[in-house]
Length: 172
Image (cartoon, rainbow, N blue to C red; front, side):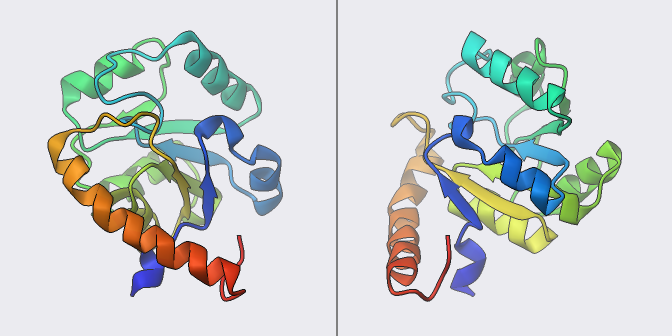
């Protein structure tokens, strides 16, 4: 059971996404959480670095989607300059809206990676849906209260994950 909380790939931030590896794996679509994955939860719009990075991903042939548990207003405002597919009130870790987004992008679950900063929503959702689970460290220490509460439990899960990697029981 705990393995469903372990990421397939764990990176510092989205700028370190292994896009060449993704292409070799047949990943054609990247589904991003927004808050503390792509931008701080209290930042309304994507900054220039994020805009350039996401544009590069599009030019490299990846289909992009935002999948957020946040409100329609938040998601639409953030996505204004980006123009990716976007799903708000996604109900993660539930998989229904993720699977719908994958279908709408015209790819399969096996061709999709979900990129997020939370173990109990993003990683668990990805594994339950059958997509590649990519975990990033949170962009900043500020979090919504409910997320802050979960971070302690996430640290325990990640300690177990790191220990299993160190002992050779898991591969990075």
